[in-house]
Image (tube, rainbow, N blue to C red; front, side, top):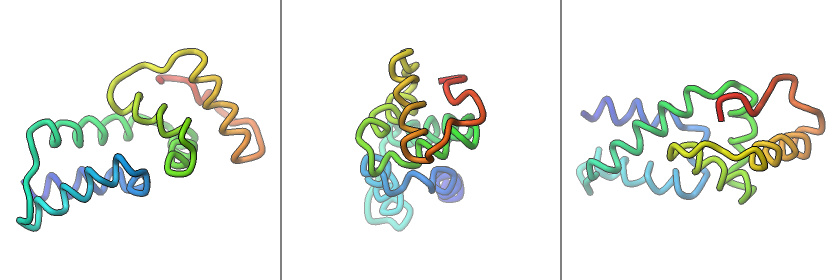
Length: 114
């Protein structure tokens, strides 16, 4: 189980600085070292986060990795990771945020699959 948890935590490494994800990572680290425990819900959350993160394309990961400094992006990331489909407005906002941070339009459809 330790190896599986380490693999799951490693797969979402770009999100560790985002507070809600960082807390879950810290709880997992403590559980692995024997200082705490994880609930089944926590483990399922890690699995879902890892699976959903891996489904994103590189441009989507690039903008979502800004979640720790931008509340709007953070909210959209949590919605996505928790299984909620983003609304059209939220997808448009994400596209605008991409342009704001990277100073060019994304070369691919950033909204696909969200």
